[in-house]
Length: 62
Image 1 (cartoon, helix red, strand yellow):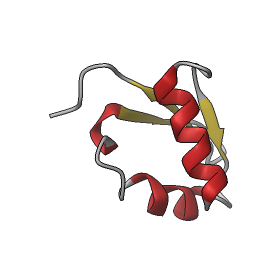
Image 2 (image 1 turned 135 degrees about the vertical axis):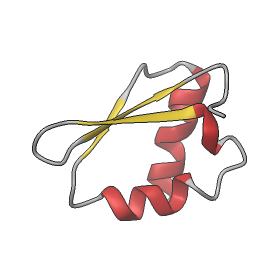
Image 3 (image 1 turned 180 degrees about the vertical axis):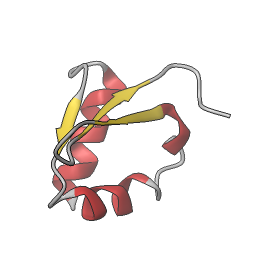
Image 4 (image 1 turned 120 degrees about the horizontal axis):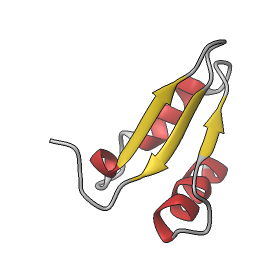
């Protein structure tokens, strides 16, 4: 679980532009994501085959 948090921090800090999560890891990743205070700053776009690409946005979703 720590690695997921590290990945999210890299997105937030701009170290990475995007991260890809495959369908096998989606629920474990999301469990970490929704516990963060800045949860609404992350945007996930679902792709064919069950992959989700996450990006960090400066402005939170409503």
